[in-house]
Every structure is written in structure tokens, then in C-alpha cells.
Image 1 (tube, rainbow, N blue to C red):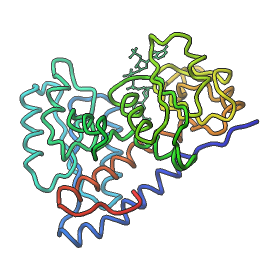
Image 2 (cartoon, rainbow, N blue to C red):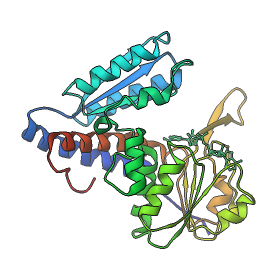
Image 3 (cartoon, helix red, strand yellow):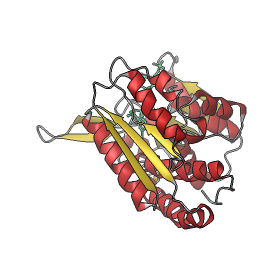
Image 4 (cartoon, protein in one colour):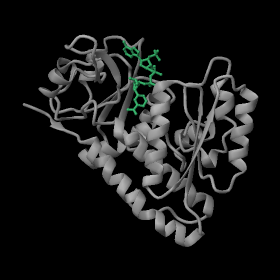
Length: 296
Ligand code: NDP
């Protein structure tokens, strides 16, 4: 058996198209474009790439992009002042502070300054609390993207056994909350879980968000399981001096057992920015007091 490949790239393109199609309606109602502000502190090359592609995608969707690049000498107070200025700026519907932040800057303190109504990353405790109690919230982009792929593939998730490997606030925990909301029976596994292969083998849905290259093997999976691989790991390639990207799942062996699987790259990765645009549009509608468009 060879699993179906879940094409996150195509789904993300579709979502970006639906967001872009809804922007003119917002402009007609409010007289302005939805706006996303991205704050980057320091020179981290990977973060620079992410911020550039977020800016490009925002403009391509017909939204306003505001980029704030600050030196790595920026203090916590200075960064908080920038966030407060963005909170007060009516053109800004979404604020994203690119992580990680330089040493000496407390991420929690910065994130808690973001207006929860503009928290398009969904990292503010108000939003994670709302998600936990089942209220309408801005939800972290990567797990929401995973849920969209799962629902697109499986439809109703009620009663399915889901195992989420990883308990970070960014991916694992919100992923588990989202699956619980869909009435899955959810297990959260982590580095202290005993006999992880046996836990994973129960699952109809496996979401791997660990950060360990190709850790989840095919013989850990229940035949026919749907596997969502969040991992992005750079490992040495066969050719000397080159690297390649792999997920947290051993794709070759998992493909033989799973019913469907996301590839790396081209699976979950492209969903994150598409959902960020979606969250910005949703936040813009909520701030303007108008209902969000259907189908997002
Ligand atoms: P974290 O490092 O914050 O969390 C990793 C989790 O994995 C922890 O809960 C940890 O457990 C658990 N873990 C570590 N080792 C093991 C093990 N041997 N067995 C079981 N569980 C283990 O990572 P993130 O959640 O931020 O990211 C996870 C992966 O997803 C990374 O590869 C990251 O690059 C990728 N990622 C991809 C995104 C995308 O857009 N596609 C976005 C965000 C992340 P414990 O809590 O016990 O330490």
C-alpha cells in the first residue's frame, strides 16, 4: 500500500486565493485594506526569510503590509513600545512578532502586550484560554492549518483517535485543543511518554511536532492512519556539503502503512502563511464589527 499524499501547497494556494477574493468586500465596507504588521528583531537569517515571505504574501492577497525591522540591540521596553504603537494604529489588524527574540528579551512579556484582537499568531494567553474553553479565538496558524488539511481529507473527525506528539504552546497544545473541539479522542505525547510507538499505533490521526528528524517510523503506525508531519529539520544530504529538509516522520516507511501523509516540504509548511493571512482577514472583520466571510 502506498499512502495518498496530502498536498498542503495546493490547499494553501486555494486558501490564499479565497482570502484574496474576500479582501475587496472588506475594502468596500470599510474604505481600507486589512493590515498585517510584522516585527523582526535582529538578523537571524531564517527569520529574515520568513518575514520577507510573509510581507510578500500579504501584499499579494491585497492587504497592507507593515514591516518593522529592529536591531538586535533593541531592549524589551523598546520592543514593547513598538507593539503598543501598533496596538493603537487603526490600520493594523494583525501584529506578529517574529520569534525567537534575542537573549534578554522576555517573549512572554512582549506577546502579552499584543492586543488579543490583533494577535494573529494566537499566542496571547487570552486567545489560548479562549481556545481551551471553546470560545471563538485567534488560533495559532500551524495547528489550524493542520486541522484544515485533516478536515479536507477526512471530513467529520468525531470519535477518531488522535495522537499529537509534542506539547509546545505553538503547535502541540493548540493542535490537541482543536482536535478535542472536533470530538476526537486526543492523546498528547511528549519526551517523557512511555512506549511512544505503542501510543502512536492506536491513532487514526497522528500529528508529529517534535523537531526530531524522521523519528516516527512506519511500523509505529496503524494501517490507514492519516499522518500530519509538522517537523522541519535540516539534515546532511547525500551530496557533500549540501543539506535537505526532512520531517519528524520517516516518510519512506510511513508511506507504506499510512492512508494519507503530508510530505516535507510541501505539506504543513505552506499552510502557515496562508492561515496567517486568513487570521488577519478574520481579525480585520471582527475589529470592524462585520461578520467574517464564509469558507475560510
Ligand atoms: P518544541 O521544541 O517547542 O517542542 C517539541 C516537543 O516535542 C516537546 O513537547 C518535546 O517534549 C517533544 N519531544 C522532543 N523529543 C521527543 C521524543 N524523543 N519523543 C517524544 N516527544 C519528544 O518544538 P515546536 O512545537 O516549536 O516545533 C516542532 C517541530 O515543528 C519542529 O521541527 C519545528 O521546526 C516544526 N515547526 C514547523 C512549523 C511549520 O510551519 N511547518 C511551525 C512551527 C514549528 P517535552 O515537552 O517533554 O520536552
